[in-house]
Image: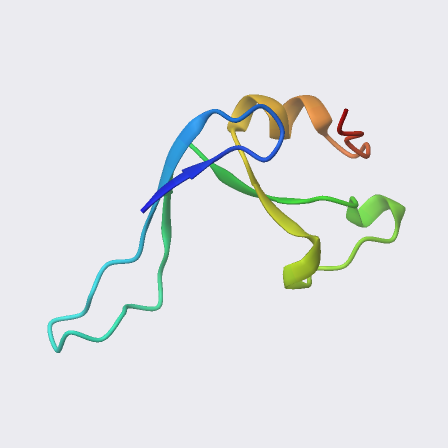
Length: 71
């Protein structure tokens, strides 16, 4: 499934492989993307779905523990 970085729009993909019985496996793979806390944990952000976004490695590393202010 195509996806993109929340911050810069870089292309990536999400792949959720199926088990041999056809059900989804427990692992999700991200190609070119990582999970990121929109509000960093260092600033009180939680690991809840509403605070998790996809980010490319470059944006995620540059952002580090800061908030990303979108234009």
